[in-house]
Image 1: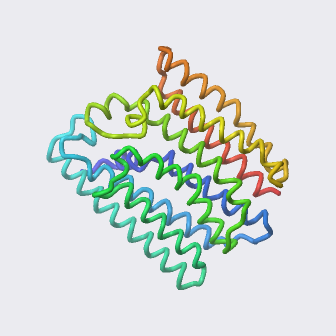
Image 2: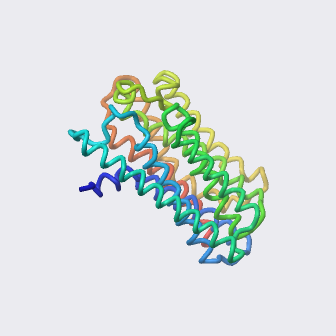
Image 3: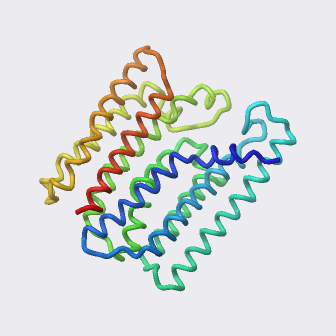
Length: 293
């Protein structure tokens, strides 16, 4: 019998929630610019990107080397059954995503720009999960996920509504992509020893602790510095200031990670929760501002 709790855990629900938030941000920007929200396009697009994400995460586990366990104390027979279930389920979700894209096209809810972006998202996640590239195990998977979370998902949602690019989209997505990368880098720390044991490359193992810590700090600092300069770029301060309510979480995150690097106790559940809060709250506050204005 397949363990559905394991399937749910491997689907990375926290990242799915963050993806839904960044996707909502794109539609919020379109609404702020005066375009009414097409609910069907919004809902179908969200379902498609979530399906693509989950399928990619399951394929990552499917293509793990045979000696790498997917569950604790699993038997070879159980492991093979789980891997087979992951592959079949991922295939089904990709079929659902393809059907959604076709539906959007046939109902004329898919502009060319959004169609191209859908194709790019699929290519990104195929490269992330499937050999021969399989960037998730090559140390570059975090870069793919950061670009998807911070840029591609909100851009897709925006284009499904607005049907053309706008510089306001770049203003919102660039710093969020930096925060997404910082969040994903923090996620690598708790599994660092296991990744080394099984020879799995992550962004952290490639950077090493010595370079990863200052890189994380730089990403967080640069993101909030960019938000601080937006009034000089012609954007209303009223759109930006709510993001700085997430700044205390970012400061604590930097301080706590630096403390661990200097030999402090590693409370990884607290650290990763803090990273989720920093990125998630920044996205939520920005999206909420666009939706209510």
